[in-house]
Every structure is written in structure tokens, then in C-alpha cells.
Image (tube, rainbow, N blue to C red):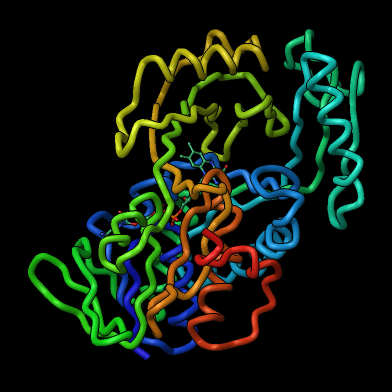
Length: 366
Ligand SMILES: Cc1cc2nc3c(=O)[nH]c(=O)nc-3n(C[C@H](O)[C@H](O)[C@H](O)COP(=O)(O)OP(=O)(O)OC[C@H]3O[C@@H](n4cnc5c(N)ncnc54)[C@H](O)[C@@H]3O)c2cc1C
């Protein structure tokens, strides 16, 4: 089959890899190079035990994705020759007030029963033995062992390169419209060309809404901006990924400390701001005060594709026999990308899927 993929973020490139592996002829269209947006500038934490829709209704889908990455990432690394810095790591979710501690402890009640992870409450000496540089005002934390993390840009580059090695072609052009013939989508249009295909897959991240005008009804996805700082702090070691509410800090394999983030409803603005830098620094120092002397090396901003109910869409587009969509992963698109790609590829090929929970991700739920 000939398949057009619109969008070269992590969902589009992984889908291209899987489809090319099955021998299909794949074209990816993107005006920018793979990983130029959120998929290249995320934090890269694969936190399976928290976030939107977790545990209900998305725990099974999330665990499917977490486990699918364990096979998929070595496969793309082997094909592309590009390492992704995929690794196991531990995580601390900090509490500074009794209200925060009560909330985290009530989540441990179900988290500790999830197979494959070790989850416990740590406080006092046990906590500071794990992470000696934490703010002494921290009253306790959830300690989650055996999570994973990855370097998102390398993951996307590795997936794109692996797909290309299996025959995918990447065309650096934006899609301006779809071509229809009755209830079939027979291809895509750029400003200067048309490309016919048997199947079209939309993986346009926060720009998915622009497909609404092509298909005639609303795709309820919007951009949610997030910013991250990369800091140089020689001699400072952080052993775990440290989270406090929606903020985080971790020492990455590039030797830099990455800290984030913001949640900004500002449309398609991908510019960095001084306000965000100051807010992230303030939140960072609440977690690890000794980072005050660290030096800012890089500051990035990008847009999460946020669906109206904060859950992704992985489905055939109703009304069209051969048009599919996978988008809207919000803050969890790096983690969910394996299940989104496997799930949508199974739908395209008409295969029964091993991915659990896809029934919650239908487009007609809106
Ligand atoms: C600051 C920040 C931190 C994050 N941290 C994490 C994390 O730790 N863990 C996690 O799991 N997730 C994280 N995320 C979320 C994750 O990055 C996203 O959910 C994910 O990257 C979305 O991938 P995508 O492929 O759907 O979209 P994108 O990466 O946005 O890719 C969509 C692509 O479509 C292209 N496109 C748009 N319109 C067109 C068109 N008309 N024609 C052709 N191409 C088009 C765009 O150019 C873009 O390349 C984070 C996000 C942010 C912003």
C-alpha cells in the first residue's frame, strides 16, 4: 500500500517505521525536519503511573505503551544506528505540605499494585539518602523505581532515520489540503504538488485542528506551550528525576540539568520568555536550592498537542474509508507514542491490536 503521513513528530515517524517494516510505501510530509517541535524538545520522562487519564481509563493503554517502547526503541536504534539514551531511572514526587503528602500517599494505594514498578513513601533520612541535595523543607516523597526516560530529539531522529532506512521518504513540505473522491481520501496537496495514496494518516500534533477544515468537522486539539531550561552545574549530581506538582528537574545523559516547565495557553507561539525562565528557576530552587549557581546553557519552548479531554485520539476519521488520525497526547506524547503508533498502524492494516485501551481514544467521543 502507498501511505501518506502528515506530520513528522514522534507519532508520525514511529508510525512510518512500523508501516515501512511491513513493506508499505510511506511518505512523511512536514514543513520542518523531524523533531523540530514538541517531539524534539520534551523532557523525555516516561512516567507510567501518573498524568491525565491515569489510572482511569488509561492505565492499561499507558502500560501497553511503556512496555511497547522496550521492544520498539532497541529496534529503531538497531536499524538507524542512532542511540536514544533510553534508560531506566527512578523518580521522586515531592511533598512540601501535608495536603500534598496526603494526595501522593492516596495514589500509592493503587500505584503499588501495578506490576513492574516498586512504589513507596519515603521521608526523613531515607529520602535524603536517595537525593541528598533536596530542599530540607521537603516532608516526604513518592519513590517510584524502574521508570524509563529517553532523549526525545534523539528518539525522533532515530525513528525517522530507521523509517528512511526501511524505505520511507521524508518530504519537507506542509500539507495544505486533502484530496477526496466520495468517501475516500485519495491523497494530499502541498502548495505546488499532489500526492495520491491508498491511505492518509494525520499526525500533526497541535496543528491537528487545521485538518478540521479539510474533513468538515472539529478536531478538538489545541496547543499548550511548555518551556524547559538546560543548565550546567559542574559537581552537582542528581540521582533521580525529581518532580514537584507540574515541575521537574533531572540530570540528563548530555551532562546538563534539565528543568521545567510551564503550561501556557498562548496559541501557536513557540518563543521563549524571561517570565517562564524566572518561574522555572524559582520552582527548581524550591526542589534543589543548591542549583542557584547553575549556568543557563539552553532555553527551549514548544507546543504540546492538548485534546479537550486531555486524552489522545487514535482512530479512523469517521466518514472516510481510508483516513486516520493519531494526535492529542498532551504532556505524555513521548510515553504514549509507542501505543499510539502501534494502535493506528494495526487499524490501518486491519490487524487485531495488542495495545489495550484503544476503545477510549475514539474520535466520535466528542
Ligand atoms: C516542555 C514539554 C515537555 C514535555 N515532556 C514530556 C515528557 O517528559 N514525557 C512525555 O511523554 N511527553 C512530554 N511532552 C509531550 C510530548 O512532547 C508531545 O505530546 C509529543 O511530542 C507530541 O508528538 P506529535 O508527534 O503528536 O506532535 P509534534 O511533535 O508536534 O509533531 C507534529 C508535526 O506535524 C507537523 N505539521 C503540522 N502541520 C502540518 C501540515 N499541515 N503538513 C505537514 N506537517 C505538519 C509539525 O511541523 C510537526 O513536526 C512534553 C511536551 C513539552 C512541550
